[in-house]
Picture 1 (cartoon, rainbow, N blue to C red):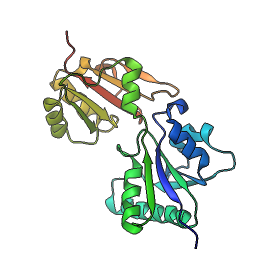
Picture 2 (cartoon, rainbow, N blue to C red):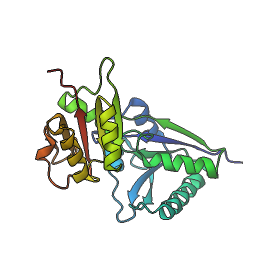
Picture 3 (tube, rainbow, N blue to C red):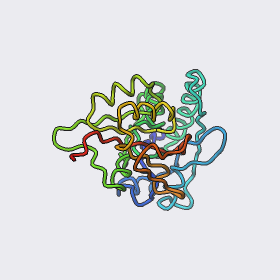
Length: 238
């Protein structure tokens, strides 16, 4: 009987192929099969593109389609279908890696896949190799101190509602807003109300072509790029 392989969720970082850990590079190089998420509307995977310098030329790549929707029934169906594809590969004895931008357990597709696999196939072996997040890389890029001493840092998504965002920003010393392209008008209005516009850095397409860094969010376009995040520092130590 063939011993099932093991799946590792691999964080490939924010965009620079050199920002992968040694362990991530080793896992990618040794994998029998590489899984990469892509929109069902196209077959392009940013995570796969980042990892390619570390992949063997002969490794098999399986792209898993995930629809860009908030319809829970559609998403549930896609997660289950993709989990079954991965499970079949593992049962065939193949060790696989699932590539994900940033960190596998921070606002990542891998989290949904892992949960589904554990529900459908609880005996399968699953591991995680952490990755550098986009906000860590963005902070390093501009020398933005995320937190120090007794300060608090809140990490949230641009998907959250205006009142929820305001509540979080009120309570935290500093903040990171990922997926800042979502509800951007509300995000900017909220920051304006809290007088944080000039204390917010908007970073788009970090480490990619047409990278944009705006030190004041009031200068941002009405619709920032999909790969955008905001760093908010309420205490400037002036």
